[in-house]
Image (cartoon, rainbow, N blue to C red; front, side, top):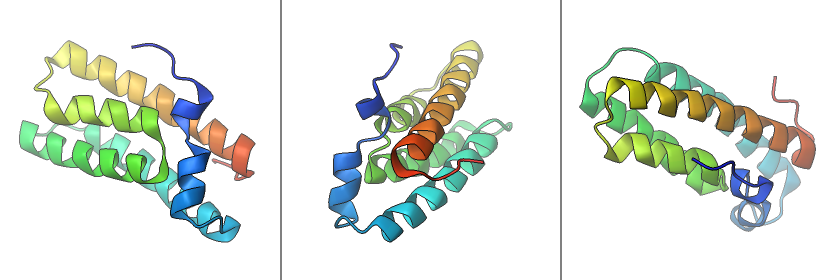
Length: 116
């Protein structure tokens, strides 16, 4: 996987469209997404069957794409549509962690929300 650009990490134009430019709404959505993304990432790191994994990845993909967190959406889609072997799944989870961290930095930098 190639390193995503900042615009690919968090599409602020898309986010502004879906929040109608409302800064308070944007902040609340980003806080909820940040928490949900980490929770789903933690859930995906536990042992589960393929169907449960795909369901969680689908939820993460939809949430990410809904707010413009495109890089997270891409990795979640890979997890959702693939029956990845154990090593490839572990690599996808590692990349997901990196991209979630990058997204949190983008949120902090671009929107001014502390990701911790």
